[in-house]
Image 1: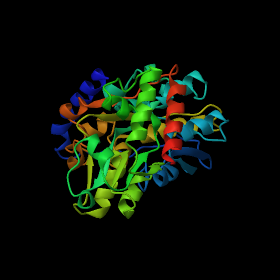
Image 2 (image 1 turned 60 degrees about the horizontal axis):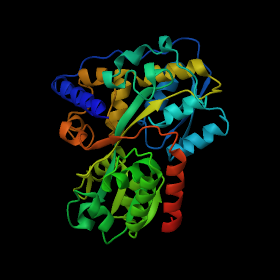
Image 3 (image 1 turned 120 degrees about the horizontal axis):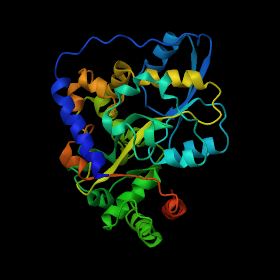
Image 4 (image 1 turned 120 degrees about the vertical axis):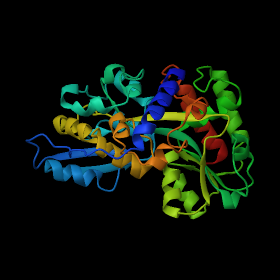
Length: 361
């Protein structure tokens, strides 16, 4: 994890001087010939592409994209594990990639069909969770922290203790590893613990500190916050920054608590049994185009793994300077990277199920 965050520091720091220079002229991505009239089926997280990402690909290749969404990594895994219904592209998080590879749920990638893989930052090439990018390439990365309405809360939140002790409605995220990881962190344990007793303690900690929880949100905590259903939500950083941008007000804040939080990388992969593997490779190459990647990150407010986009000054300057989106070295030192734990997977699943049952959520 420390190697990961140190390399991210180098990426952001290296990108800053170039990002504030004039943008370079970028040639538009060109689709390989022969795909006209074909269909690509994409299964992705919600609120995770720019407005024109899909339509521009359809126009460039003369194809139709069927675009479905899911609300949690567990939902993605369950859907693909039960039999791919026809998806060509999926977007698993870093800790799911090795699980899916081990279960033969992913098609190997042909790097020769993805020339724009060269645009990736060094950190995201040959990652520990997928050596040689054999089955995945990085799409976006970010953190899971705290979004809140400062006006409703009445103070600035800096710690997890404030979240757990708040006398008002709170939403947690339906994402078991980061949630249990925070509890493990608060208890002084490794957030990737494989010890069943420590995981059980983390379960009990969440239950004991969950009295203010009115919702365990399936990636819509930001909407609950915006509606006023909750005053605090544990959410993906980009979702909260989208709310902040839409509001154009000073009410909403995103913070990485001082104790620490989860950092993640979402990846583009081709599920086993995909009906159109060649077009899926073309789509991955399209997403890795510097301009396309920058447009997505600038729209979603998640961090880009695309070094070419950063070097060309295509990333919004305010976003690049925002440590809630592109954490600096000090913030990164407080982050933990969730890793695949096959021997402890059932402990975590059982603990999270028990948390939701005992909280009635």
